[in-house]
Image 1 (cartoon, rainbow over the protein chains, first blue to last red):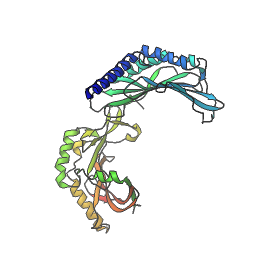
Image 2: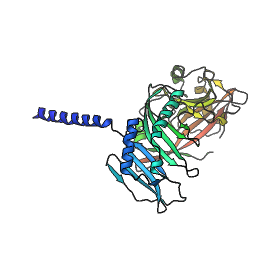
Image 3: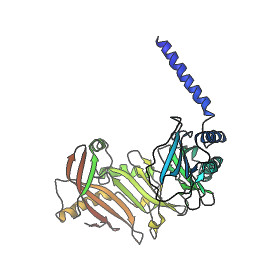
Image 4: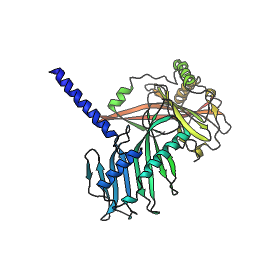
Length: 207
Length: 192
């Protein structure tokens, strides 16, 4: 009886393992071209491509993976700042009631104008910026990736936070320490759409 | 005299802390051990702007040794955790705080004199009739710095227990503090 139960548990865990593996190739992320196309598919089936929004944010599930777990869009509606989010856990689009009254009308753009392919480009650029300074880190993952419409210029700005593993336990001048192994870096695009580091790479930069 | 300071702590944490016994810079018997910790973990030839020995309040047991220095045009502060002997990641400091500051080498700041200076400080309190023989005076903070001429001096603090009141799971400890300066010639002065 016990042996049977074990066998059953084993089969179940094997199945979960298999399914999670086969799901892997189709995981939404911004760290691979495949992940980007899965993400784009999810966006188009979830949201109206013409919807005017002022921000789009992707969140990863946790600090160890960079599969996207949640997609937020924000937009003004009835003079309130509204945020809807799609959750991969619930497989639903959630529409919480807007609370915050807008002081100032944000600039918006249609969802389809947000260039998702660029996220992968900027992700690679961010890794390049880190590796130009130091080789102490590996396994670069997205913690969150935000795109927002600049309220004055109307440009779409990108900002991203990367989680990385520190290879050794030696102390480092780079990154923001989360724990002994996990370090974080932040980047954003400037007015010329060039990606710059905003946290973790300033140790030897002039103030 | 200075207004009493407060230390609020969760009781659970407070009691768990007392398990560890850390070396004390005011104790002559601990100085050898401390010098070993310093030579093994820090670069004694490093040019620093300050060297700071810090204890948890009202313990006198050394918790951290921290120091700041310049590297490739930037200024950093890092600290050694005494019980684990692990160095922290350097954290960048603002350049403006270091204008016209002079450095000294870690090895130039001798800690061997500290126990004697501590005894002298207690004597100063006695001379000023500030000393209470029923109290312990904890050397919780000692910082080596340089003056304008580049000479090493030190600022240090003695904390003493005043009162503890308990409300629910938290306790509030009131303590008093005397601040001293040790001049480059090792004479000492009570600041208040």
